[in-house]
Structure formats: structure tokens, C-alpha cells
Image 1 (spheres, one colour):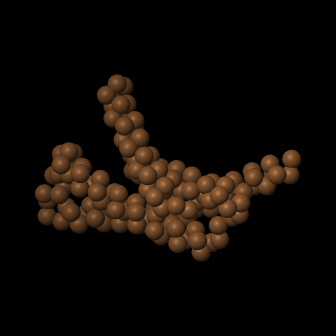
Image 2: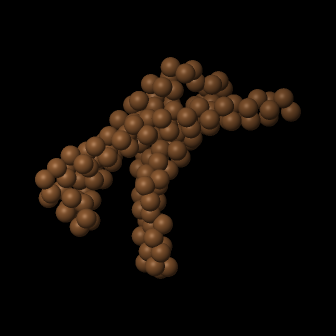
Image 3: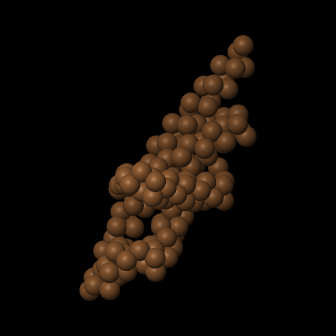
Length: 144
């Protein structure tokens, strides 16, 4: 499991979702952004990492490896989200307004830490799910 690939995939999913959200708002005047979208990059990146691990090693990652990778991936996701919040505070008026309020930065930090906790659990679950699925597929193809 490669952390660099995870980070790039995570960031790519994040930018893609923002682009889709902006385009839908511009062209169709609809807003589908919600809190659950924050976990989609973690799900996608974790599933890709699980599949790539099985393809490279022809074996399932052990549980310790998956928990360790989930912990580091959550830290990477936290760093990316903190950078996004910092950049967003210049662009998005609502974030700038929250940062100007007393305790606003603490609220954003608490939400970022909550997001990192959920990312930790999501990465671990979907990493294992994708690895098991890919392993069964590889095994089934070898039997043919």
C-alpha cells in the first residue's frame, strides 16, 4: 500500500467532487453537496489501494498492515483537509466568517479531527473490502 498514491487519489477525488458540485450548481442550479461527500475520497482511495496491494503481492494484507495504513492515511487526509480549510478561508465567505468568530477556528479543527476519525474507520473497512474482493477475483481467474 503506497501512501503517495493514496494521497494523490484522495486529492483527485476531492477535487473531482468539488468540480462536479460547482458545475451542477452553475448549469443546473442544483446543489447536491452534503457532509457525506467528505468520505467519498477516502472510500475511493482506500478501495484502489486494496486492489493494487493484491495485484502487486498476490496476497491479502494482514490486519496489522491495514490498521497501520488506515492510521497514516487518516493523518494524510487530516493534513489535506486542513490545507483545504485554510485555502477555503480565503475563497469561501462562510468559512472566513466562521474563522473570524471567537472559537470558530476551534470548531473547524474539531470538525477536521472528527473527519479524520471517520476517515480512519472508512479507510480500514474499504481497504479490506477491496482487497478481499480483488483476491477472490484473482483466485477465480487463476482457476480458469
